[in-house]
Image (tube, rainbow, N blue to C red; front, side, top):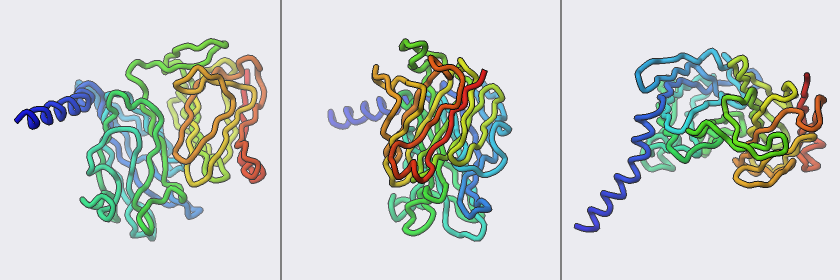
Length: 315
């Protein structure tokens, strides 16, 4: 009896944060699809994104996204306490393989794992031609961070098609609304609402794939491969550097330094392994002014293959 009571108490304790998150945060009602680009690569597209707050009011933010499929896929932004219900549709021409969504970092029931029955021993958790699939994600307290999502069903042996372009980014902002940063040479807590632009850079084999989140225009701008990034001098900018594929990288940005997450270390070069992330805020042009600052992978063979871009800081 004591064992049963103990287990019941543990279950209640584990359930409470998720229940609290569902009651206090927003609900993201999202529709996405897996599609094929003219290049033959696969990509995710945002069909619809609406946000329902705790009072029941609904805001439609679909126009913030590209109307076309993109690599990386749409960047979904949540706050600790939010939940997302994501319905995925199959729109990959001339393909019958299922497509799915598997996310890292946040909480979800086993039915939302995004894998096939051969792996999860439960059911196929993917969209098929003519048959969609709905996933539920909970950004519970403690899940703040930048997380990858990707396909886990397409192809043989149903391990997923990240290498073909089926991956994207989930950003969970902390409930406090603040993040640590190195600003004017000092470690500070900055308000997320003061960040003007965010750059999501995926390091895939020998190529950067980018997405800009422009908060001044409330738009997500696909940057595609090895892009030139841009900001005005003095703007607060947040970078999200993510690894995907099988290669190991070293990310380096010229002219700027940042606070390595969770530490007091000031760096300008970091190692990025597959699915590893480096997220940091900096002040564009701090200490160096305007100019075109180089960023690249410091692995020689990757640089020689063109894995580089520019960070242009203007007045």
